[in-house]
Amino acid sequence: MKVVLVNGSPHEKGCTYTGLRIIQEQLAQNGVDSRIYQVGSRPILGCTGCRACKKAGKCVFGDRDGVNEVGQALAEADGIILGSAVHFASATGAATAFFDRLFYHLPAEAKRLKFGACIVSCRRGGATATFDQLNKYFTISQMPVVPSCYWNGIHGYTPEDVYQDEEGVRVLKTLANNMAYLLHCKEQSRVPLPEELPVVMTNFIR
Image (cartoon, rainbow, N blue to C red; front, side, top):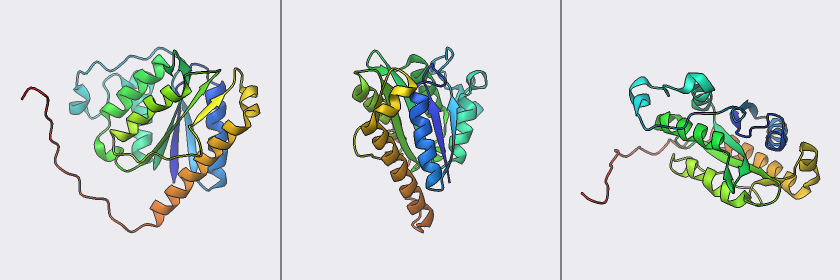
């Protein structure tokens, strides 16, 4: 079992990374492997809606900034946890651009019914808005969202501050425990995946 952890913060070893490390250590205690991918420390091109990925089977911009690497990792993994700092009460620009392209270019079978979760880090406010934003990547991708005992936010201005947020640390460790539990349950299950229904697309004028 393996979980992909994605750090969308511009600070490679900052608060978001520290939160992901807490999760990574807790997953390991539950027998789940994971890897942290750093993606937010450089400018990232947003999705242009070119749909070239539908023909190429990958994001045509993704070899430049790791979108395809993380996409392949997710396709081979059992779950994913997205992490972002809070900028203007939302995910960072780089994280949003990366996650948009990551989830758009991957085929449904690479995501469907795999477990997803997110964490956010902030100094003070904007955590729940960012949390809601990131969870939408999972709900549109048929990915069950793993819960914790509170909304998955960690507070602090420095990595050292993160460990002082004892309630936040408990939330992250609980998230890791719940992710591991669900992965173990799925591994033991013999229930086949439900049949995928045909794709139907409509709009509001025809």
